[in-house]
Image 1 (spheres, helix red, strand yellow):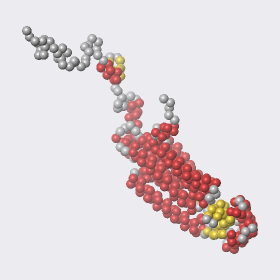
Image 2 (cartoon, rainbow, N blue to C red; image 1 turned 135 degrees about the vertical axis):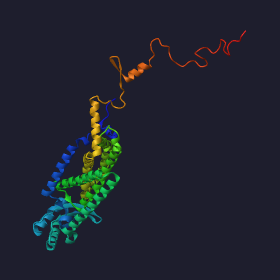
Image 3 (cartoon, one colour; image 1 turned 45 degrees about the vertical axis):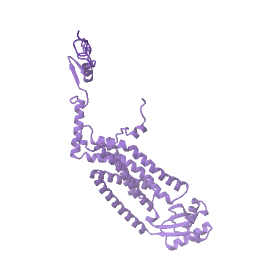
Image 4 (cartoon, rainbow, N blue to C red; image 1 turned 90 degrees about the vertical axis):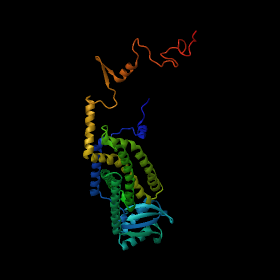
Length: 395
């Protein structure tokens, strides 16, 4: 029979991928990526949106031309009346009143904003009342940040309590560490690439935490099922049982991630890219990046970290030593595994137990065959004849 492919073995949970056994590699990779993210926070920082950095926003009708043309004319107006400021971000936005271009600039004074608006109207050849503008204070962004951090702390506290009640404290620590790593890596990607951070990005960050938690709980539930009563036998270590659980739930996690990423990818690439719905870009981008990172951290980090913590438990540590010692004894031939047929010594020959049983069942040479005697007779004699009742009559 041809050997089944990797995909079919993954669906059956028989891929036997040694994920837990390579945990030092995953920890080293995760540590290096977190270090890169932290360095990016310090060097590149974040590209903050107008809601956090403060600034002005101008809305121009989309009928004035393409987005690039509109941005160039707004930059010309800013150079003339805005003190040399430039457009920070430009995107196409749709509303019930029609489509328009939203141009965000650094903080301008009220006089500069009015002068830039008048200059923009002359550049586009439209009335000044067709251009709307607004100003956002930096203080509003700081309030959003504080509330987001408060929401994050409350979420982590509730998750920790739930995992302790549902599983145990070690699983809670491993899950929280995985969630925080997921946040750091996603934020690091934003900092490295220069994606703009907006309130929609903060909402997306909190959303991916729920998805990452779901993936971790699914894996941990299978780990708990495989390791329940594990110390009662000496066949499997805790790490091996946890690795088996990962293989058994890997395809489920992969399917869940793919199914979740498909609509988010459609939201990002079709809605924001092709249709130009700029308001969907911030939310779709953080969800796409965060969900992809969440799948990797839940598989490659959460369970290996759990195994590392469980191996510090004296009971689990002693169990692992017993399993390894028993395997060593079996390899040296000092212990025969349970269920293995023992050998039978016959003279100078060693006969397998199964062969000996078959030999004992075979009849000896010259022996009378054994079998079921004919019914209705004693000693195999015919039922009639002789001086037995039912035989021939006496004369």
